[in-house]
Length: 292
Image 1: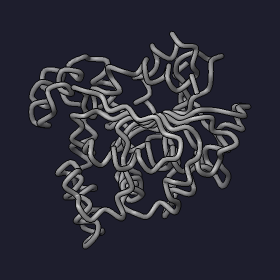
Image 2: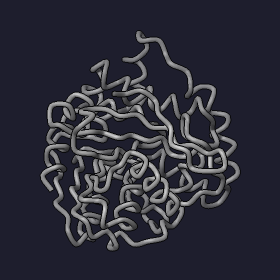
Image 3: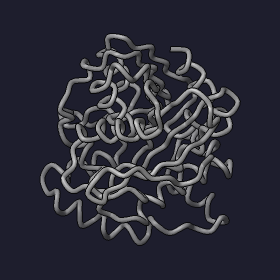
Image 4: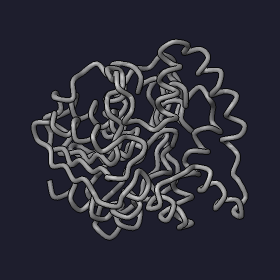
């Protein structure tokens, strides 16, 4: 199921995607995190097969094997999704978004309510452009957002300098040291000791960096810019999952965002962090999503 495929977008551009789970199952579009790529959907493969779900996981423009689109906006994404699902002969579908995939799920649901049955957001990124108090963000995100607001070209340069290091696969024996250096919540560190989960998370990140720093930068800029719509414009059912131990986006930020949707069922999970929530609860998340 998980063989690389392509859809032509015109003028030589393509979007790359892979499929996981049940080839004949209920279609669910997967929106990967940041920095990440389509293979993050490996997390869904086993539970999707068990539940009869077909996972379609595309790389965003400039990520891994998808063509870079200069100066793209979040509002461009629903058109790409439309081309992909039309190519696959899918009329209605659901969306599962992890972390940085959340804005793309919201944009698609707002633009295509007649085709999107429901969305599930797991540890999702909130709108950052209007945030003045960044205390609820991971320190690294606070730092990047502050630089972007005053010296965006410097952030661009730093991404290029980081690429040679972040695109390399470290030896397996260094994984415990890496997890320690990341200063993760205990629940996240424990979940990432599982080899398959570690590979799903970190190999998908390396694929993004190996393709180009430009693609990672373009994806990052989306988060810092106005989205072009209000989250209140999302009218489809929202299944909102957030770990109470999430360091990337605090549970307080998540609660404020969840309250803005007209049709939202939030779940704030005890002893779950940014990584452990999708790793440990994927079957429950998918089962709930297809019940909508």
